[in-house]
Amino acid sequence: MTIAGEPGGGLVDRYGRVATDLRVSLTDRCNLRCTYCMPAEGLAWLPGPDVLTDDEVGRLIRVAVERLGVTEVRFTGGEPLLRPGLPRIVAAAAALTPRPTLSLTTNGIGLARLAGPLRAAGLDRVNVSLDTLDSDRFAQLTRRRRLPDVLAGLAGAADAGLGPVKINAVLMRGVNDTEAPELLRFALAHGYELRFIEQMPLDAQHSWDRAAMITAAEILDRLAAEFILLPDPVARGGAPAETWLVDGFTAPDGGPARVGVIGSVTRPFCGDCDRTRLTADGQVRACLFATEESDLRGTLRAGADDAELARRWRAAMWGKRAGHGIDDPSFLQPARPMSAIGG
Image (cartoon, rainbow, N blue to C red; front, side, top):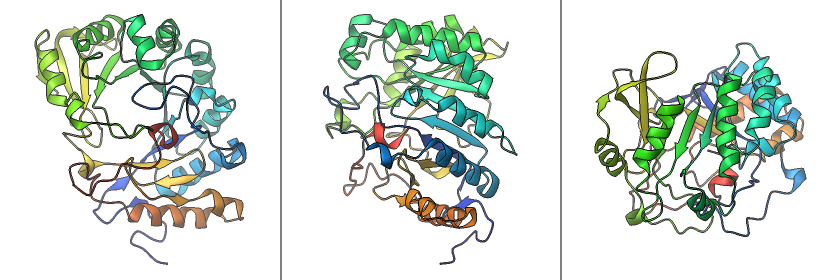
């Protein structure tokens, strides 16, 4: 099969978008049970043989970087810190030429211990999920009393030089939706960059309700009640977050402090999307909300060479849809939850 962009091209789709940002899920397992992600009892995890080995992950990242033009790799989960071979995987990616930017999205549990080794392996920065600063509310949201571990992980990441350290926060109506200003004050005080994310229809329970979602506009209204937010002159590009300068505050690098909002539902940025996703079991997803996947694990284990893996990856991305279609009446939530897809 021949598609546009072959041979030797990057990850181009029919709408002219080029994927240069690879999200790699290293596991579907997690040590929290966040209410907007999975049920209290957890999920049926992927069988061990289905999960890519460390060497297989490393090879697919190499193909993406050397043959497909990927310039940034983000490690996700589930919870990627649960992956025993994580430092080795990071080191292999950091040794590639050209070297990609390497980041990690984590819940922060265990990061205080692993931040130094990961920095030494070549990790550049981290995003840490934190939805509340109240210990009881944290336990309500995650069904675990681990807030001190998350806070220690943030501090450990900053101390190790994994900056800018970013915080991802999801606000839920009637639960933590009053905490936006407090979370921003905390981030500013510690030199972290805060990103609010609209709750998306990616929960395992399929109980997402748009009417209950706190929108980007509501988040900005809550922040504007206590802070002066100024338009960010830096072009957004393919970044998912719209950012604002927080007047009167300075970032650790001496530049202006920023806060971001990722309005995936009400302010979709599909037209500028530059992401491709690889699940822990070796499936390519062209979109976070895709209902179809392309199997690279089977191709890899059948003995395919790098050129064939790259060709199949290009084919998978060529079929990417114009947008996620959440507002379309025909929208179907992906069968896989966020923990199995990777952020």
